[in-house]
Image (cartoon, rainbow, N blue to C red; front, side):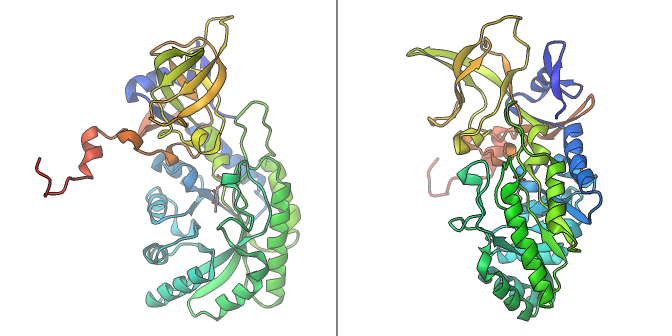
Length: 422
Ligand SMILES: Cc1ncc(COP(=O)(O)O)c(C=O)c1O
């Protein structure tokens, strides 16, 4: 469900035409729908209405300030994985006591930042990290509320690169060592082990593997409580998938919430969720313009002005995005198989191969659908292309929430050494 659709033959985001946005912002540009973001957050929140739940939006999926602020205003917390994400979440209005700090490699500075701001929880992923956090907290005369992220040895996720719950991955502490780690933590002076966390992967369409992981977390929580540990929170992570194709039908938030309720049973804890893609995924599209049509060796290359630096998912994971013409094609226009490629000097800069598309010509606009998650956040300046612009639409209003830097701005952060004669 999203708020993108054709009106009078032109693709719109809510009440604003993508043609108008392309005219104002130039292309490529991401466009987000406020109504879609709010709907997805509210559907999830409603599904858990009977539970003590903190929905900590995974900022990594879309960290635009406008997006985070939209969700913060609805009561969302934030799951952050860097000092930068922490600062952005707070700037966007997420209260510190709704921020969970995840990630395998928190630096001392990031720990200090989290402690200074008084965040809700650090999700700790190793013993060295635990000891470092305790030492940093001690130096600051603070206490750090922690959950260990356990690696439950459960496989899930839409692609090997986004599967995180198996022993070969770097994530979490070993499942069978968890009890021992809680004993260690409870003996340290400045950490409070209050929770258990898990996150087994992303773009999960069927949630059975989550049940296996959550059951391990809940049974660990029960055992630790019996032993007198003050476990008051469990964090079930994120990972629920979204449809990238019409044929895809992921398990719904309602089914997800039912499963969580079943697994939790009578365990009285605060539940934390870290959804990213579920909220931001189909709330965004990337608009791009056709630069050239190149016919060569029996292939048709539709060369777009968006590249893998703007939308990396296809190059990184072989991910699929529907690509729609912004103007509806003429009735009965034949489709033909084309390769949709970008301007970057890499063979992987290809969004789709042999994709049946209606006739396209130089100057036409297309929209990559379901590009709101892991789109702009994975973008880069590769090939010295200024970072892609972003806009947020509410009804008939459109706000540029990140403008494209100028060449001068892009270059200003760098300098040539003085020893080079120029
Ligand atoms: C620890 C953690 N939580 C939450 C998420 C969000 O996942 P998703 O966007 O699939 O919901 C991720 C994504 O990688 C993650 O690593």
